[in-house]
Image 1 (cartoon, helix red, strand yellow):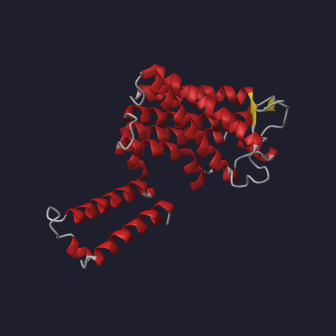
Image 2 (image 1 turned 120 degrees about the vertical axis):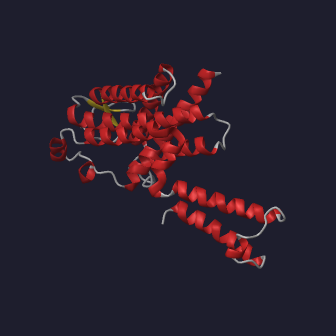
Image 3 (image 1 turned 135 degrees about the vertical axis):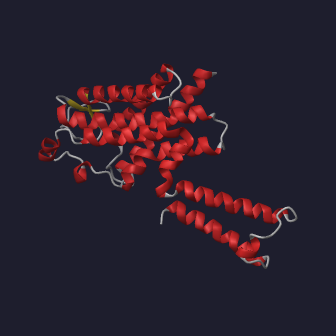
Length: 273
């Protein structure tokens, strides 16, 4: 059971307890006229809300969340991200395994990695669906695309850098030379590939109607570059250091894609003002 499932189940239990204190069973409660009892109507509304949110956050309905918010095009972008991300992970896999810098499990992504890659996109989709923020839907769509641009850029930069990087250096001063695969290190080959793939992903998004203009393509590329650079510096400065054991790759990835979404939404808002 996920954390979300436990949270919503606990809230539903409190609703049932309130019903019992009022002397009504759950089955009886469903037949009450809510027009005559506003408090019962409020409980029923909360119950319906809990059911809806539980379904939205259920592992098996996450694709439906994206499709409900951004349509088939949004879901297609998620599929493209996973296909391309998996493909670049396998580039020169044998060489990377021999050097001890290949992704664990042959590049297979576990649940933590999936959440670290898609959490920001799911949050953008939920925000767009519920309309619970003053941010317009098209800006949440922009943040959604930027989050996947950023993660795909990061994955590509890392894997291409480990496969083809000739000169690898730390992303923080004094930018000393380090072996390929060092946490927080970057290379010209990897960084260039990351920028190119984020631009291609954003162009795909505008071609299928997920972005409104080529200006938004630029916003996504800039947001992806800034967030990916921040992720590299975060890895170089604190990841793996004493007291930061909790800062795993999945957590860092979650921070990175969230930052990319925020930057894209802020820039998008500034451009449309």
